[in-house]
Length: 180
Image (cartoon, rainbow, N blue to C red; front, side, top):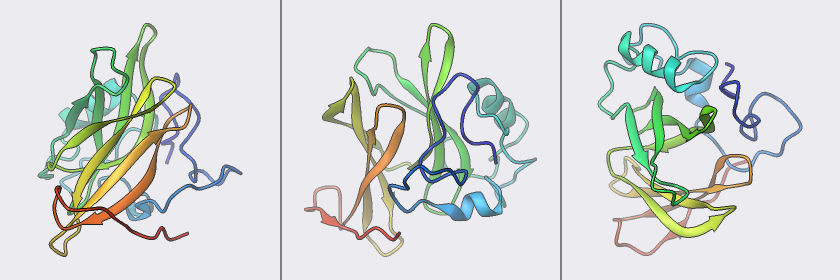
């Protein structure tokens, strides 16, 4: 599907594109197999080459028009005072799949094309690697609880580090086994 980059960004996410890169975590392949944004008032799928301009143009043309989730979210991930941009590329029942970008002198650079998030919030964490902080996304499980999904920086891009099931944001964490 061409989700690997925006021309200026790092290499594609681990586990995508059939390369020899090790897959770190089970990912929501249903969106990729059926076409990103399928069934959500889509004019057509998102742009093959993800860029801020192309995704925003797709949104303006009606991409994800039927989704209940915010098409854009922001969070400062590297502590520079400038928020990174999360742009929706696929809507699911309980979450939106976001591409994450940061602004650099040469323009917007893709940091990840596979972050699940909802209206339950994104939270920066104190743990960091290379100046990029981990962050948590909260997503409803559909069984009355929540998934607390932690994303971490691997030196090239963000990946899903761990998912934990909880009854509420205040509950103790219970790791969920990862399917390989």
